[in-house]
Length: 239
Image: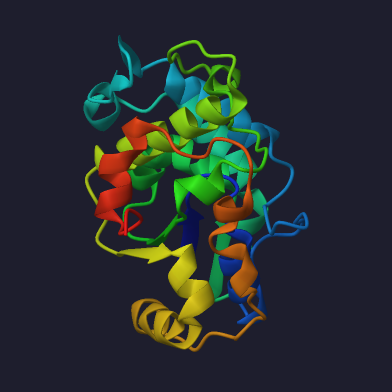
């Protein structure tokens, strides 16, 4: 059995990877929305709020995630995740997985529950990622503290950097690959070849749209915040 999950902040175009896996014969759950998210999402949302109780906000844009790596995982959390993944885990399909961006918010405990599955970490330039609305724009909705701001774009950018830092602070699993959305769109064949080597089976080629890359360049609103620069440099987005 091959079990796969996609993590990455909402509005990163993770649907492209979910659609690719579905088109390649991977069972992604009984009910999916247009974005390829496994439904219903409420157990996952509730699981995010359980984990958030053990994240300590240090002020500014710093959080302490250390408790997540050593403490016992509450039964409440594991029950919610098993409820959410019921249709996937019970399926007899040899290749199966799931996608919902909120998996990123619980990545440390998902990893501890499923250490041997394959993780695809999907990254998108935050300047494009914060242009559109997503459920995780306001981290307060999931029980996570952060500096107050009335600026919607800044809230989205804080959500992006929080999830980046959470993933960075978590020891990487045995099976891990990072994929930039821009590479998937502009260098699809090369990127899919790397993913095929990682997953161990051939992948379908879905239509891609180059105009989705660099949308911030024609946007009139603010799309850049100084605190994003180090992470952007790491992923080659400052070029």
